[in-house]
Length: 451
Image 1 (cartoon, rainbow, N blue to C red):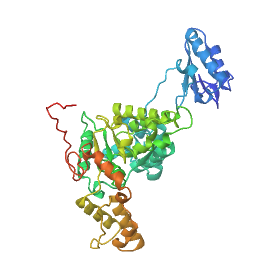
Image 2: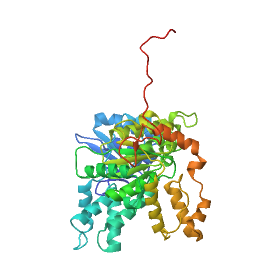
Image 3: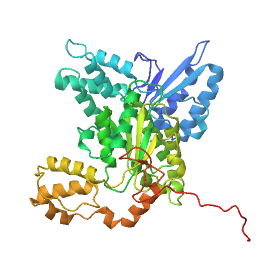
Image 4: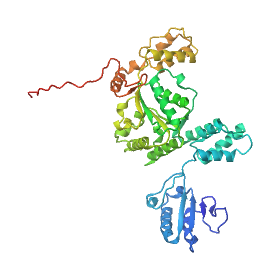
């Protein structure tokens, strides 16, 4: 039997069963009258989670489940989320239905696009399946139907559009698909080569999969832009997780949203997951009296997933001050490497200048300002202001104050911390701060001290 708040009690084929049960309490109570003989009776309650806040309904369900052990009656609750009260938590078995895989998505596409010429084949069909990965069955059907209405055939663009809207409406994740690849990003040669090689190896179906990287740098050195360009470079969508949006007002809601977001990320694999300024996102993880340990539990859930997930998700976490994170966050086997992005050198600055001079239509022969302490973001700002104000670069530079000047002490402290602890983003090997030398142990005399 089926019951919902709109139609009441009815059979699986929509037939009338002759039982009046318009409210949830009478629906559960009717299960006793349905039992009889040697057969098995199953009562399916659709979207019943909305009524489990009532003490009377909870008690009725509890009694029906307990009595069902002897009368061979079973209660099945269909719900988009798990919200069982404490009294019922041990009586029900939760079955989580995964989102459709690639084969099921292709089957849905063939069921929707039935006319000749509506369904492409080969690589174009695989591109459509890539775009639909992570959608539910109903969302995939809607996306395919939208593409047929707009283009008279299935196209990835329409599927990506609906997928972006679905993620945005959830409020947990956002999807980025841009046109900029590594050719639009100056410098970072070692980081580019490392990530490109690891992800291309994963795409070839190797038994070992890439996990991700952590990027540490002063503000404005290209961490976020690198994440967006990486997705285009390796042909993967970039998901951005805003940890602040996971916070909920109810007890346990933040942790549940975290698990839900990570399940969505797993379903959309292969992809790139970006968590920007992660040290601020988990600022209360070290212990805070204001959130009752919510940040610590959310971070614990994320670290467990980061260590144990087997989906093809490449995680990139960016930070401006890694010292605010606990040491277990960046330990081995959670990331493939921790890279430090220093202020760009002369060669990297020349590449960045050329990129933004071309982008804003400024002559390459124009005199450039002094840029000894500039980041890539400050070079872009100078070029944009020069084009906006229609002034020379040297005059536009008067409106740019480098972060290396305003935060000189914190940047120097960050460099000293990264020295010997992080990989260099511009050249192979360990990052070494300018002028630093490898740390040596202090020599100990073999002669014992008088003290």
